Length: 419
Ligand code: GTR
Image (cartoon, rainbow, N blue to C red; front, side, top):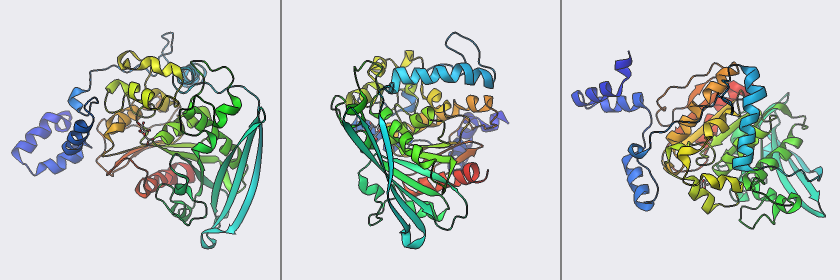
């Protein structure tokens, strides 16, 4: 049986029967296309897109504590390992939220019970945060399905693209936030614009929520991704109170920098019942030890405001990093988690994303979730779902599309709706 699954066997079959190549692709799972590899390699010669150049690496152990104790049961995970990992990603990657007191006021500024041609109710909710005589307002938009007879699960999108993508008037529609389609599937759908919380610019943390709450900044002060994750939690503060929503069934969805944010929000806020991490890549869902696509040095140089300053210590030091993103992903366990990649997004390293999810599974198993992922990636556009974890690699470019959302909702039908 093992021989039949082996690479040698598959290669032998292809040599003997060339038409077997197609079947082999399915058996072997997704592979980056040579055309995409060549195109990206030519454009960015400083970055690796060749699987053959991925170094031999050993991932830091998920289930061994900082002082070498084996983590063998739920209790060990909850009491020892999870807090350690949360602290590691707080102090070394995303940064610590300041303890500065602030005032929060939540105002429902508009209710339209006949939105989407009567299919949904729209609520516009302003979340005002003030401190030190400064304030910001997070504009949360929420549609709930009118045909629902009881509270429904909800998807909250952290929108990192222009606000047009989440047009609450629905004059402009975008696959990035396909609100009509989500409503049609019986879910509530909400979104906020990340720049309401903190503009995505390197301005030395003067604007956004940093301008309100930051005092002395240190190497472990929060960056912009942690600020967006904090903003997602302020939206959850409202969503858990809305009677049309099941407060214990709120999923957070993010794409790319928004997906790094969704993971960190899910890690930091246990009210988030499910995380959808679409193409987060470096600093989120891929494995830095693989040195494939975007690197830590590059992300820290291009986006110096995203992470805490301590993260820069790992520039070009991937081999000796005491953590990697399988550990970040494991912080979502035992809650449902969907990791998704795109075929042409080799910058974000689809295989690294799959492997990070794969190596987080022992944490799920320890918490009593019987999920198991195959070693090989699934073929393109074919989600693999195992209990509380799911993954797909979609055809096409780095983006968040209706096709992705449909897969996410199929997963939520099983994990959020049915129990
Ligand atoms: C890229 C960045 C990625 C990813 C992406 C995005 O430029 O290198 O890490 O976050 O932006 O957010 O679309």
